[in-house]
Length: 331
Image (cartoon, rainbow, N blue to C red; front, side, top):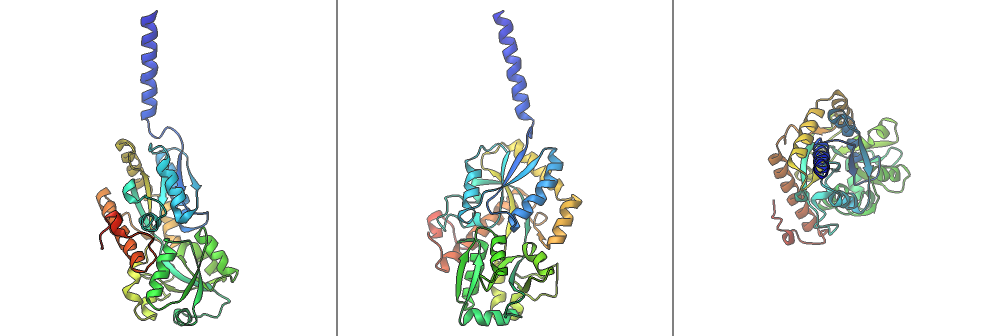
């Protein structure tokens, strides 16, 4: 009897281990560390749909906003690193250490795929007084303007530092997400904002907002006639290459290798899904996974990105801690 019981228990343990090894055996969560409606949220929801088809499991998006992205990022880091809780990261992970938001960096996560860059655009209320980037920048320099953004160390903050290098005087008003910053602009609470094209485009088409320039070094595919900031504001062309919002899907650092491989293969296949390709085209985003297909490519990109952004904040006087404290060398 005792021998039979041992055999039964052994079989149950074997079946249990087999079930656990079949990843994914249940639904997956993608944590977005910002409020709903912003670029990171929109990309996460679009990609979750096609990733779900590849993995044959439900993939849901959870918003955990706060502290410029550090709340949601920390939640993923503290969750079990088993591939069932993932992070859709934007740029804030590259500056959390120097901004003293958390001790986390890209090194604390494993890259699954580097998805896209959502172009930055300078946006005003269509009923406001500004009809060109030049007139806007003239007012930024004298007497100065109010700008909405998504908090210290985020992409909007980076943009503000770049504008200040061009002589702008800005009063920054923080909001928990990109959509919140847009709503403030439409309500005339601020003079302008720097946002992602995919977030503002529907409001541009409806006539509520107006894009004055692309804060980057490539034309906007949604409307190539919109000028680059460097074409209309002296000195801007040297800085706009730093205007970048890399969106990536990440897993916890010690996620099992076989789970990571399953996720990476599924993510790569998902990028060929017509639903995803239509979303990328309609939102005007730049594809990054073709430029950085390998894990080593992504890790090299993240290292350079953190270095560039951290030192930009340090040189602009906005960093709370020196990049040198974390061994981050100048780019």
